[in-house]
Image 1 (cartoon, helix red, strand yellow):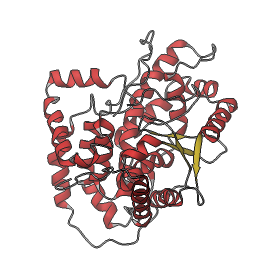
Image 2 (cartoon, rainbow, N blue to C red):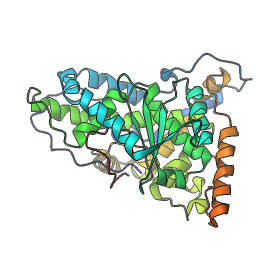
Image 3 (cartoon, rainbow, N blue to C red):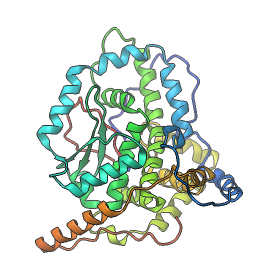
Amino acid sequence: RAAPRRSLPAPTGRASFARAPNALSDAAPSSSRAAEEAAAFAQAPPGPPKKGRPLRASDFRHPLDQQNTQLLEAIPGISALTKSLVTPVAERMLVLEQISTSVLVGPEQLPHVHQMVLDAAAALDVEPPQLYIRQNPTPNAYTLAISGRAPVVVVHSALVDLMDAAELQAVIAHELGHLKCDHGVWLTVANLLSLGIEISPLVPQFVVNNVQDELLRWSRAAELTCDRAALIVAGDPKVVVSVLMKLSGGSPKLANMLNVDAFLDQARSYDEQSATPLGSFLRNAQTRQLTHPLPVARAREIDLWARSADVLKLKRSGVFSPAPAAAREKHEAAARASLAASGFQSGVFVSRGGSSGDEGDARSPATSYDEM
């Protein structure tokens, strides 16, 4: 699903910086880690779960996210660039845009969806954001991080139509993952730069060029972290993989025909074909200007992490605590009743048997967001 944003200018006059591996591009292919993950999983025998401590961001943060965040913070001039972009006026525009063009979910407005937000926030031990549903034909969701105000998550109406309740909550949890990991400022800067916002003349161009490249690298790594947050809330990796599959090539008419296992086989095939030197080079070229890793790569990553010793330890310690199903069940019941009342039939469930791009959006150029 990870469609590229507007192409960034070709880099010129860059300073040299040490680089972490690119998220799922110049990093080692996921398939090369499968045996290690399986061995680690086998070495940690299951045990009874117990009530654990609150969840920490470090419990699920992807290593590439941590590495690339440190690289961003080390770039000379990054603080001045951030201040030149993230202004009170831009933040006020973000708030007014959502209030004026979207529906705010709450106890009296789609209460079952509101409860799904509360349950996801509780599972991730983060303050619940405001959730807006916005009319848009492109299935997508994004996060607005605004200083001094409650954070905002926006979900497009097309995504609500495409996902079942568990998948919709997984998308919300993905966005909450950005808030849990304090991704907000970097999301703001990444989006404003990619949309061509004018930069203060006091910020040297070589700084802007370096930041653009590193922000894309960071953004891809951050998405891997937030897919893990979605898994923690969903409790089932096939729910998260199903979201990625639907964003890649789903539609309401096809939703009940798609198969998660087949999509995972497709992801493993991509791993194998991109493991050669030529495949690695082409993978780098394919992902360099993307804000998100490729959907098949994200699916493979979350499938491996779900079976890792790290997740098993989180489950045994009681930290890995999926959201309860009651609100999802109410959402599904309400959706079925609505379809029955309107006389329409729609398949919203996906086969989950077996093992486990955004264009045309009418946002303001100042909108700070993370796209699912």
